[in-house]
Length: 160
Image (cartoon, rainbow, N blue to C red; front, side, top):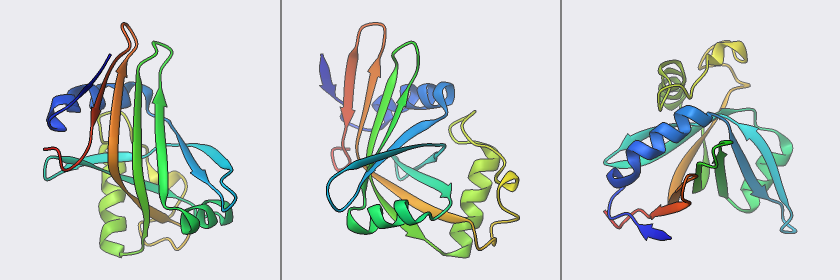
């Protein structure tokens, strides 16, 4: 059974708990011929004006950059062996602003939600490292599924 959440707040606790437990997401993009490609990544999420906003510290690989240049829509799928799921459909946008990179660096250090981040210093020297790239992830649909009974709840922005 699927229900619609009237506001993100209605699923926020479940969203945070599942992401904190699962941590890694499968990010899916598609190429210019419509062929999907997945990769396993750790995004961090914050709440801005009552809605989730995601950030991904990553390398700007040729495949990822080409896919997102052609189609910026992506899905982040989180799954646990208990069958709990969070699916986040989002629009991804590269952000080069040093202040944003510093903010994202701090989010990863603090972890957001609790347990999700990691020290970016293992991969990049600092927020100013030219090899560090940041994707802003603006969700247009978030779905949570509870594994014990497959109860599904969908939230879409603009419904708050």
